[in-house]
Length: 210
Image (cartoon, rainbow, N blue to C red; front, side, top):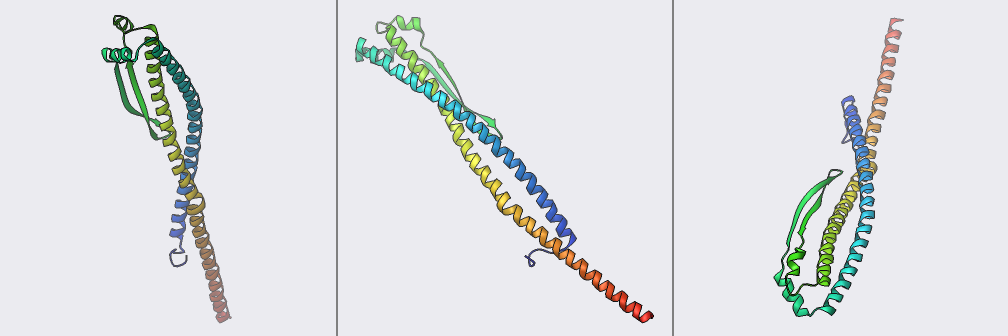
């Protein structure tokens, strides 16, 4: 250590400044980590509810499709799907959570017009119900995908922030404080040596005077 650190006043001031900055950075990173963890658990609870709703919608949609296939021939379903069209738009944007950019998926599903559907020979109430449920399912899948992707991003950022906090707490700060302690002790020894030397000089001067 003595080979890399110059034990002088300016070095001590430099180390004090670095320690102060490191402590501030450590405090801010801990707050950021804690904030990210809180946001993650909020998203986790939301994701559980959304996924449960999505699974329930899937079951209802599947049940509705089974009923429709019982009441309607598969050929009619295929013909109907080709004669009706919906306008589906998905736009990928982003939002900010604790300084972290996470995806935000904007979706717009223009439902097939019920009156227009009923004009076709292939349309039926069960078919309309099935279409409506699957449209709802797709919307829910998009919402779940957005939330779960945000959770993955948050987890990565939490791990990254945690590594930085630990690096400061267990590596950088102890090293800087050890260097500061070394410089302080060395300066104290130099001061003691200087005082002893001055006392000896004074003693010699006094002896000559006598």
